[in-house]
Image (cartoon, rainbow, N blue to C red; front, side, top):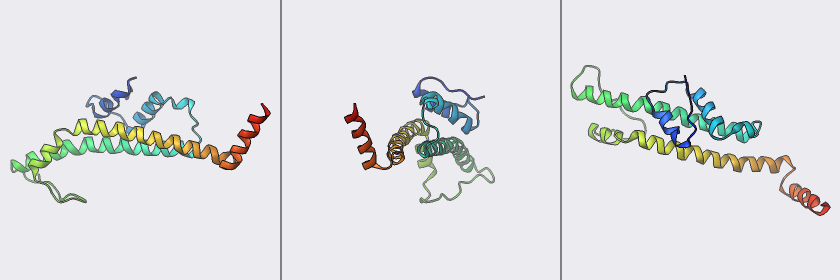
Length: 157
């Protein structure tokens, strides 16, 4: 069962809470429609489709991260205790860091994930607004045609 609280600050709590287990797509749909009032937005624009896709990618990444960090911490502990088959694999795109550094970085991953999730969410929303304006201008035949239409309506009234 998935739920969304009414305060935007709870997005990070919902994502990071161990009490909430749900498919991230269900969670995304409930958060997006609750927080951004998408029922009132144009849902047939390309901008909206891009927004929803990118927001979903951010949520999916957060879900992956919330699985990866505890697993990595567990693997480090097992490796340090000499548990068979517990070893940290080589990482992609970076040089392997010492286990102590990984544990140090992982201490604040919940707060950082929350912070970056909210920043990303609003950043994609800003691009959504820009994209909708561009689509609106294109819908009216381009900038010059839209200006002529607006000026024509202004002069008539």
